[in-house]
Amino acid sequence: MKLKHYSFFNSGVKAINTRDNWDSVRLDESEPDYYIPTTIDAYEQLPSVANSKPLAKWMANQMALVHSNVMYSIGCGVAYVEYNVKKTAGIRVVVSDFTPSVMRLQALQVFDEVVELDITNQDPAISPGTVVYLGRIDTELTDAQLEQIFARLHRLKVQHICMVPAQLLTPKAAIIEAYIFLKSILQRRPRTFCGYNRSLGLFRKLAARYFQLTFHMIEGKPVFWLYKKD
Image (cartoon, one colour):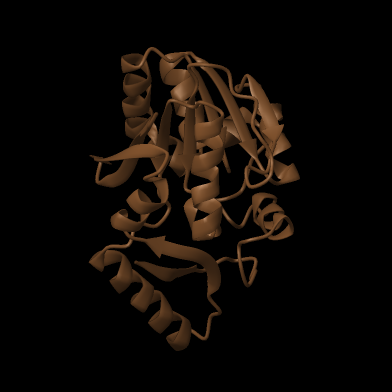
């Protein structure tokens, strides 16, 4: 199952599904959840950097269990989880996204490599033993695109994927969508289309040919750990 997902953006973009729209919010300081600072001091003040420490610690532990010392993040956005993994584990961390604004992360001098990459039509350069991180990229992808990404990573012989869904379809998520709709009417504030909430069953179905998906809750947030099928 899936349900359309909406949110509010100060910049007033109608949908978050293009390079230009994403770049506009990545460069907009009025969008604190999406803006990419170019100084380490400003970056470390982002609330998401502190809030993602428990997830980063869990990911670092999972990577140690599978003897991986490289993370390749696809669709990194502001890369706050990746930042904390780098700080926690001291491993090689490569971050990538499909918008030119991702290159702003180079100024932080934290990540080992920053790459502009569109996973829907490009192969990432992944070395053996790398854990791929898919953080909150699912809403923008169609079912076919998401399944094709799993197929691409399977073909590249990726053994393990850590995936944090942006929107997992639950009764609570459905209530939040209803609240956002009502708020937009009462405040006469336009909603921004952000993609889809998907159910756990749909995620499992899209990955099923290529990876076994296990479900975890970290600090109340859903996280998937996927193992490559032969």
